[in-house]
Length: 471
Image (cartoon, rainbow, N blue to C red; front, side, top):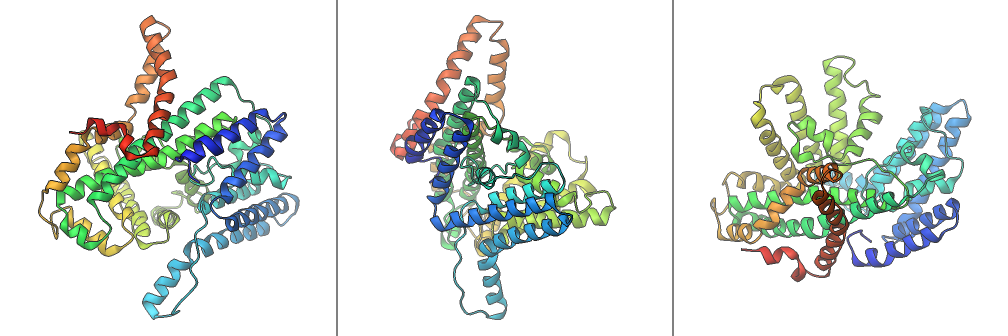
């Protein structure tokens, strides 16, 4: 079950909200939320729910042991090791077996292990909880079902953000829902849904058309076609990821949870370091607080700093997927972060910093997209006109002209422009009657329009509003 489906919108979410708001007490509201979260997760496979229950039980038990006994470091190590072992078995066994077979010819065969949905997100949440209990930053949760509620919250357990226990601890026990929170949550959810259903899905369609996942298709494409296709993939991946965070934050706010922001317009960054302060913030801060700083950060000289950065960015690549291209993607960003610190520094003129950053991000997404390294190499060469069907092609030109309005709107959606306009309207609404009515009407109608056009887009491409603006 995904957020951007008609069944989720008009079935699951609607029924959940009705049951939630009719629940008489906070205890019953939490029970409703837990039951619906388990149903949501079970939809992707009942066997995976058992794994979620098991990992939560491990974290719950060892956190209690950390808090109650004198051997807290032993129990912390055992708990974290078990959680990481389970994650490693399910996420990386196939990858290691494939590489062993490629290098040594053994084993000849092995059982394929299906990756449980959301396992990386909820495992990292449970790890952060266990470590925070050890650091005495939060008390251990005495009741298993409340920790399970934290780890299984359907708003964010599938696609993030990675929510730390300290962020929601008080709200699990005691939270209030005011009308402003509900309105903000609905608005945020509807905007995220539109980003996913209308913009991200349409950009993905263009990218898949221009960059087929086979060598013959890549070689038959023009260099211009590869650039336009990768631009659309670059737009799609931000709109997709940030849309799920928007929807998670919105749904959380509807029931009184205040999740932290996960994306801060990363394509407006002026350096690679700035990009990673803005992109997937919950993941970046997780690695900073639970890997980089415990290793010593930058406090013990240059070589240990470089070592710590290598570990963090290798793990960042591995976290995103069990394939070599994700490892290369992590190391690619490591290289630019080290170059910026030790070589580039402030040598790039200010007017070119944004362009430089976008180019680094663009080629990073090329590495990220292709798990097949032969396809990756073909596209990297093809972007410079090597091994492809010329520099320009009719298909790419037609796709660009047909979807120019969509691409422009998608580019605008990656910036703060709409947010700044909304903030200005809010600021001056108390000073000008016309601005007040514009602000009031737009605030009321934007969620409705986003929901309406998203539903049409989900029903079928023939209802995509951008078809009416094609050239």
